[in-house]
Image (tube, protein in one colour):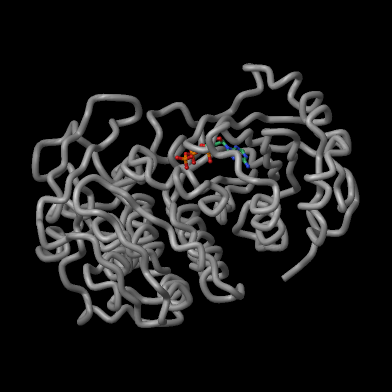
Length: 390
Ligand SMILES: Nc1ncnc2c1ncn2[C@@H]1O[C@H](COP(=O)(O)OP(=O)(O)OP(=O)(O)O)[C@@H](O)[C@H]1O
């Protein structure tokens, strides 16, 4: 792991407004670049709405120009997510040490009073959800080579978090809006480590989890079992989205075609997977490779989490260093099989209310094959309790 040199911003130990309690809490925190609130206010022109580039579950995101000339994405965490300084800085310390070409780089943060702000490298070409899967406002051409590069890049970034970092990091929220593209359309995974910055009581807020239901592994959505395998499931959904150019759920389609994974499984059984490849490619793609990617998507979303390959194998399959073992492909785990889904009209395709329909998914806890303690969910609406040790 690489530690950032301090080339700009304030160095730690950081003294926030000379608050002795904060001073004490920050002792021992290292390697994090600290920005003052004033500095970020200047960078964003007083957090002007004109500089607002996004709004997520954690808060608002602004584009800003830092005083060293770097352009940054400045994420102002919402007041509810403002955590104690010590816990916040401990997690920031971990995240800021992580550097990989397929992960968004955290420049530093600001902790003043109840303000918790994260400062990231700014990515010029927005997220996959607003470009490839967006409603047509993007000029980016996603040809097959670009898509293949994006799939492999995301897989490498996730393999790094899962297998090369100790302790490993479970992202918990792999989805198209968390894949950002730089000026060369190289993908960068954002928001890794962020879930741990959210106080535990907020993890029970169902809307955040429910908003990304299409990416949730069944065992995570229903029993709250959170392991690397849940990320691998989400990656599988994303992979199919990238190849097909379609969002995981589209309620405007006829019943039976609304859930992308269901369609993928049906076409796989009919040996017609090629029919799922994005029509906007106008046939300009490597059909064998595209079908291979879709099969890998099915493998990653297998219902039995043990059947999902580790991300390092996924990378090898995508790059052709390893064969896809078709004998292992069975029906993917589909949340629609387990849940009573009600889709509300609303922004961006709608939020999804969900309710476990089977009484067999009552609260439980267990350990996975790697010995990770898995946390549990209650039996009705989502109530996912993150295990801080994961
Ligand atoms: N580093 C960045 N560079 C450029 N744009 C960014 C960056 N980080 C975030 N954004 C923009 O801000 C938007 C909101 O990001 P954020 O991560 O807060 O929320 P989200 O991923 O859309 O939703 P959620 O909070 O539910 O995960 C992104 O979709 C993207 O358009």
